[in-house]
Amino acid sequence: MAAARTVRARVEDPVVSWTAAIALALVALALRLWNLGEPREFEFDETYYAKDAWSLANHGYVRDYVDDANEQILAGTTEGLWESEPSMIVHPEVGKWLIGLGERLFGMDPFGWRVASAVVGALMVLVMVRLVRRMTGSTVLGLTAGLLLSLDGLHFVLSRLALLDIFLAFFTLCAVACVVADRDWYRARLAALAPDPVASGWGPVRGLLWRPWLLGAGVCFGLALGTKWTAAYPLAAFGILVWAWSAGARRAAGVRRATLRSALVDGVPAFAWMVLVAMVVYVASWTGWLVHAPEYEQSLSSTQYTRYSGTGQCEGDSFVDGAPAEGRRWPTATEPDASGPAEAVQSLRSLWSYHQDLFTFHTHFLSCSSHTYASKPSGWLLMNRPVGVAADTGIEPGTRGCDAPEGSDCLRQVLLLGTPVLWWGGLLALLVAVATWVGARDWRAGVAVVGTASTWLPWLQYDDRPIFLFYVSLSLPFVVIAIVLAMGRLVGPSRVPTPRRTVGVVLSGSFVVLVLLNFAWFWPVYTNGLLTHSEWLDRIWFQRWI
Image 1 (cartoon, rainbow, N blue to C red):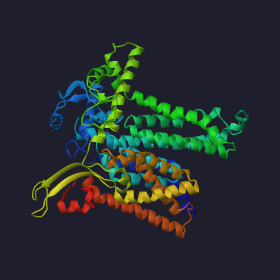
Image 2: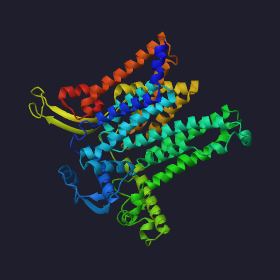
Image 3: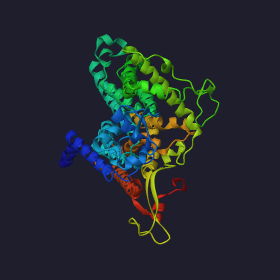
Image 4: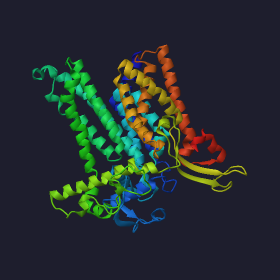
């Protein structure tokens, strides 16, 4: 028994836990770097983001490019492909700056524009381990969470593509980790300041205005917003959760009417640290755009959507107050160029007009579009419609390694599909998390529920436009948290071997093994592996997956 206690103490040692977490992240990185440059093509929306990133990294803003830029880039040409005019981009720039950093370090080729995603995907595994360890106090559960995250197909494939969603998920997870750390910091600080006689019936105030972890959350949420606007939903949701946690801590400390009082003494500072800081970081992420605002005013101010009339017309028609917007310009486009501080204000006003164009594009113009791989968000947690991002079909038997029988063929595919066992088990775990949060008031279950709800449910209002399964990757960390918390409940808090603990360990371990086997089964369609047509069909479990 003494030996067992010694082993447990060593496992929970912070040096050991950090070493194990870093080792797991390195394994995840190695898997993501393997054969990263294949297929040697622009996969799915890489055709936009890789070229935009190169332009940002080399010119400071996104320029338009020649029609055959893709072919020339893949042939090794990177000069003379970009025009002087800026290009309309429909997402913020943080993720593209990171993609561009990889391109500057490793070259303008598939490995170069994908390597940043691989690194960030591995770092996300590390953050996942540390967050769950903080929430549960268990290194084993933390490592299990990191392992499950690394074995999800959506996370794995997004870590090997130059798309924005892996960066969005990473910064959002970092922000949530900071929010959870603030909860621990706040309660410890509140306990230390509780005897403060100045606080009166409100509880301590002055010593709780500076909240460094919320500052970190604000920075991370700002970077997430600077990647995609959808980070606004978890920012709002976890901001409310911070207030609820702070009020609960004050109530436990004996403060009456803690909810209302905490709204003022905790909610206002939290809003400043999270929301205002996030907005400052977000605007700062547009620095390249602001520096080149005159180019945008000249080239794009009369060609984009400014306001939408609701007439229902589509296909390139833009409207202002019910009339076509052709010939109209942003207000700043017809003003004389300013100088000094006035120039900065003028550029910010141009950026605001640009944002109006982007908002109209996302909320109205896309409603008139369609896409083969579009799916309804109501079925995302069930993996209802994966996205094929690359395919090489019709490979004849006896060529290029194909060993298919006569009359058949081979193919290669990269499919954005989550590991089904993980997601289907996660759906059940989320139901348990809801019951645990409501019934047992377990704040940790609240993290899983609020995180999933704020990153998934908002998409239901946009199911009339082309949206894709991989958007739910932002919910993945919270699904994993729900699974690991359910495992913790199965195993129980006691470390003394009991029948319940044995059953819990067997069930939890079996689930992890099933996820690993399921991930291995889909490995060829995650990595552009060569399959016969029959082998491919064995992995397409439903007609809607084709």
